Structure formats: C-alpha cells, structure tokens
Image 1 (cartoon, rainbow, N blue to C red):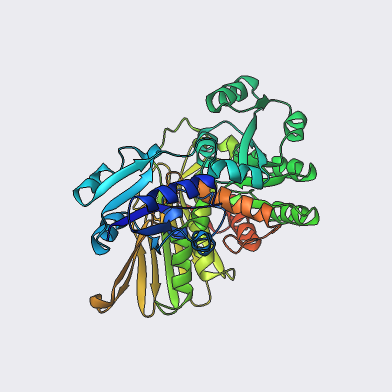
Image 2: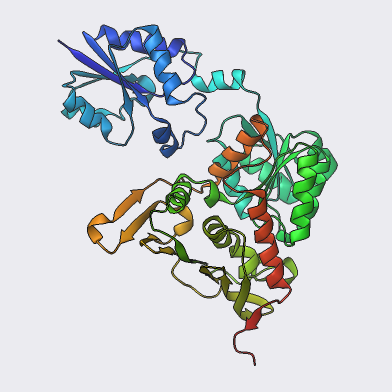
Length: 450
C-alpha cells in the first residue's frame, strides 16, 4: 500500500484545499492529512487563523478524502511522522517549492500546483470586517508595530498622525499607508481604532480625545502617569462601550500567561518573594533621559516588572520604598521595594546602569526562574529542593511581541469585551498609581544624598 501525507492549517476550507487534497489522494492508496494545532500556528506567527483546530479537523473529516487525520504540533514533526507511518510520498503546494527538499532523504517529495485566485487570506478578508487602525506617533515602537500588525487578522494600519507633518509623511511612505495627518480631527475621521505610541506625557490627552471620538484605544506603556487619570479613562471607555487597553506586550504572551497560571496553581507553594529586573544602556540624548518628557527608569521601564509583581502578589501593597541614582534630574537607576502582608517584591531598573534582566518567584515549595530577558518569557524553570522534580518550559516569543497585544485588542473589539483577564483594568490603574507615587517623591531616597 502506497501512503501519502500532506499538511496544512486548512482554515476556512476552500476549493484550493480540496484540489490539493484530491491530487494528494491520487498519488497513492492511503492519505494522511496533518492539521496544525492552535499552539503550533501561534508559534509560527499565524495569529490570523479563523477556526480552532477541532473545527478545522471536522471540516477535513466532512469532505471524506482523508483516510487518517493527525495533528501537527511541533517543528520537526514531519520527519517523525514520515518514519512512524512509513510514508512513501510527501505532498505540499507549489508555493513551498524547494523548502521541503530535506524530506527527500525519507520519502518522495511532490509539489502540486496551487489553485489560482483563491486563498484563506482572501476568504478571511471577505468573511470578517476589517478594523482600520491609525497610529499616533512615528517613533521607534511605532515603526516596530506596523510590521507586527501583518500577523493579526481583521486589522489594517491605514494612517498615521504626528504634529510634525514631515515625520508623518515619511512614516506613511515607509509603510505604504493610505494617509498621513498633522490634524487630529481629520485623522480620527477615517479610523475605527487608534494605537498611541507618542511620548508619555501626551498619552492621557490622546486617549481621552480618541475615546470621545468613539474610537477604541490601544496605548503604549505607561498608560498614563496618575491613578486618577487612569480611573477616569477606563470609566470613560466603559461608558461608551469602547475598548481601552494598555499595550503591555508581556502580559499577552503565551509563555508569561502559562507562568502566571502555574504560580497560581500552587506549584511552588505560597509566594513570598518576587524579584524582577529590567535595564537598558541607551544614548543619553534620547527622550528617556529628558526630564521634560517624563524620562527615567520608573516611567520608561517599571510597567512590565510592576505588572508581573501585581499579577503574582495582587493589589494589597502595605508599603512602597524607592532608592534611585539621579543624573540630570532623571533616575538612571531605581530599586523599588514593595511590602505585602505575607510577601515582598523588588524591582530593579536601569537606564544608565546594567543589571541581570531576570525574574525570580520564590515560594514555600520551590521557585520559578525566568532568565534574561524575562519579559519575553521564552523559557523558564520550576525548581525544587529535589532537582529530579525540576521542570523546564519552552515557548516562542515571536519577533517584537507586539502582535500579542494587538491580537488581544482586536479580539476584545470583535467580541465586544471591554475587559480582559490578561491585563485587568485595576492592574493597569495600580501601575499608574505606583508611578505617580514615585514621581511625587513618596518613599524615595536618592542615592548619594544625605
């Protein structure tokens, strides 16, 4: 018996899929179809899949072409499957020409022609409404955001706003957007949602204007610099039925979400200590070092470590103390110490000081260790007194990670959710409160001063 195998996502099953499967079936006596799992699709950056793996498998089963259906769940599985199932022919579409020649060592490899004029991408566009997103700001993070948006379904970056029209035009040209603006009103007229990547001090005003204009808002960290402003903005968003989301990319990444679930499950017992650090050595001419633009470690770097602390230990902070090294009125190094009823947490931040960027969560049964850069959470270990019980976990944090926050943002809009467990409103508000507490000098000791 001649066995044939082929693989695919098979999202929104269409004529092209059917033709490929029929051609594969004709090449042998027994056809095995591998359908990619949801987690494998995410690992490969395919965040625009419309149906989950169970629905996609059922769709393949319903057309009654495959003799057997399996799930593809990891890189390198094709070689394992070919050997395990004693495959004679591997079949794939011609748009992958040459990329699977390495399998010729194990079986015959056939590239069959694709059906012209039909694709899953085109079908998704026809089935789903597309949300037009405008970008406010043309800086470093905005330039990373636009390419990341290509991996998220139902969203298109269409325009950019910047008070400097030349910068807006250059951004439009670089990313081939539809329009550019230095007038906020005209910019807002042609978008459904906005992504704010402007300097910190402008966030509050832009969010408020966007919400009052009926636009959903995704705003870079920190959302704003005061507790009351954050409360006001979330209340405004809810009153209008709009999504307001702080773009804390780590909070939405697969590895970090699993980390939090494990800790909450009690795998390391009661948590008594959370230590998180984050540092960057940057050109001191950048905005991060400008006191007039709210520069410094706490405003620039603290939102991610604070998010991790709050996710693990909660809201009931009893005391906050800060120790900072100041240069040109900006903190270039800050250590924050947060006391809870039964636990303590420290965050260590540096713009002019470099430190190990890891995350350590200590418990009564063991501890969880995430090496630098912990905010990408690609790998972590759960460690115990008996090292034979230690467990290692691996994840892919794709490129810049901005696709994860955008995916959650769009999902909230589509499903009409104004809140998400991945980053709760109260967590975002508490981060703003802690930053405000620091900026007011409360509990602050300047290193080197009397």
